Image (cartoon, rainbow, N blue to C red; front, side, top):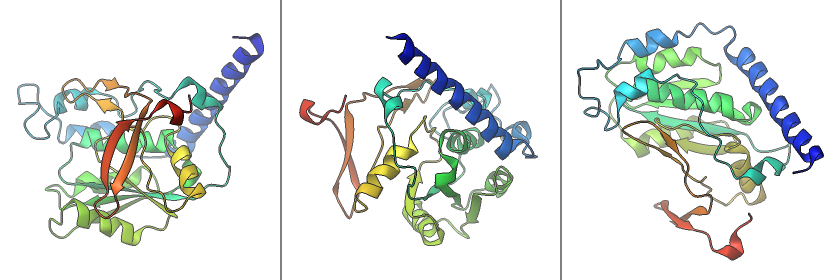
Length: 247
C-alpha cells in the first residue's frame, strides 16, 4: 500500500467519523428519548427463559447498546465505489407485533446512523396490534421522519406492509424486518441499482445475527439474491459465478 493511498483511506475515515458525529448531534442532540426507560419497561429478568417469547436471546439483546458497533463487512474495494449524488428517495417500512423493544430500537438506530439520511424520506412503523401501544408510540420522538400507524386488529405481515406502502411518499419502497441491523453504505447501492433500472427488485447480501449470542457474522460477499417468482417475491440466495463477480 502506497503512502498516498494510506492518506486517502485515513482521510476518508476521518471525514466519515466527523460526518457521523454531526449527524448524531443534528438528529438526537435535542431528543428527549430515554433509551433506558424504554428498554426497562419490558426488560427480561435473568431468571426467565430468554428464548421463549421471541425465539432469540432477549436477555442478551436487552443488555446490548442501542447504538452498538458492528463490523463493517463490505468488501475492501466498496469504499472506492462512487454513486450518483442524485438518487431516488426511499420510504423504509417496518412492521412489528410485540417485538422486543431492544431489537426494534436497534433496527431504527442503525438506519438513522448508517444511511445517507437525505435519501430516507421517512421510516414508517406499522404496529400490527401489539399488546402494548407504547412500543411504537415512544419511538416517534426519535426523529420527525418516523411515522407510526397502528392496526385496529391483527392484520398480518403482508396486509401491514401494504398499509405502509399505501401511505409512503418516497420514490422507492424498502421493507425491513423489525429485528435487523443495517451496515455501512447499505442503502446507496440499492437505490443506485433501482435508478439504473426502475423495474428491478433488489436485495442486499444479508449477514447473520446469531440468535443465542447476538454476535454479528458476515456472510460471503459472493452471495447474490434473486427474486425469481415475481408475484410471490420468493428470494433465492446463491453464489455468483466468477464471470459475474466484480471483486
